[in-house]
Image (cartoon, rainbow, N blue to C red):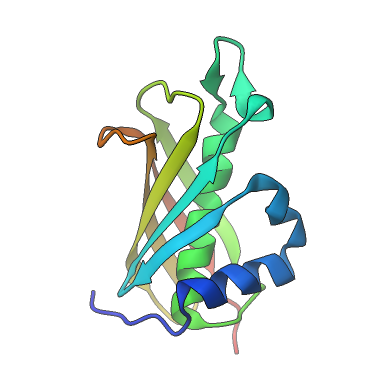
Length: 141
């Protein structure tokens, strides 16, 4: 799929904070947006950890969901009411506390549905800690 974004990473980051201001507390950062792709990051802290000192599943789930949402917005524009209709996640290995990175790729972008794949990494490792697929409903314009 060769799709060009309609918003820069700075624009989509600002828009996400505008329509979802509570996202600031998560510390999600849009690093890069390109044709059909996105890179994001977040710094985990004590409240993101579960017993055993690993990053919690809900933290990674939220990162996967927001990565898909921001990826879609970057390619369709300011459509705040695009909503998750399905998200499946596979937890692959134990992430270390600290930085998480995510990459997202549009699998399909239609008029009413978008499908994305998201990979999550821990620190500087190239080994995935989680993999997700997300489907979003896009409201009629």
